[in-house]
Length: 160
Ligand SMILES: CC(C)(COP(=O)(O)OP(=O)(O)OC[C@H]1O[C@@H](n2cnc3c(N)ncnc32)[C@H](O)[C@@H]1OP(=O)(O)O)[C@@H](O)C(=O)NCCC(=O)NCCS
Image (cartoon, rainbow, N blue to C red; front, side, top):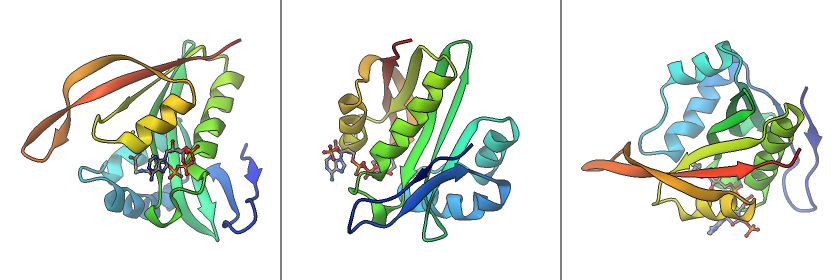
């Protein structure tokens, strides 16, 4: 099921809908433009194939972002959330996170986890504002220029 969302005045209208294999070329273009170490095309294709909760943000018929979450046994993991650079700072990332969390609640998830780079203060600010708290660090989790970068692990407990 996909939720339709309309914009506030002045911003582009957007909606969330399931990601399909046909979206992958557009998704990968956003991914490559957004991360120095992007996911491969195969990772996106596998996420869809195994039935993870994969949604795209559609703006004017184009992929304007996406979110991918796995869940089961009362836990969810937000694996990727990304908004196209020209659409950032308009509240779409926050709405996408809220949409993923709504789905997690509906699936009776009680704990949501995610990893983020310490060098990503924008994403960290978003997660903290939604109630996520840091519960640990994974040493050298990410590839980085000239070596590895730790991951900060964040958790949100959902009320039943
Ligand atoms: C992180 C990301 C998804 C946020 O999406 P967005 O649509 O730009 O975010 P929003 O406009 O909804 O803003 C949400 C919050 O992010 C933070 N934020 C957004 N832009 C910011 C900026 N330029 N500087 C600081 N904080 C910022 C604020 O906390 C903001 O909340 P507020 O509007 O109440 O102040 C987006 O920046 C992105 O795709 N980044 C590249 C990919 C990425 O890093 N993904 C996360 C990997 S863990």
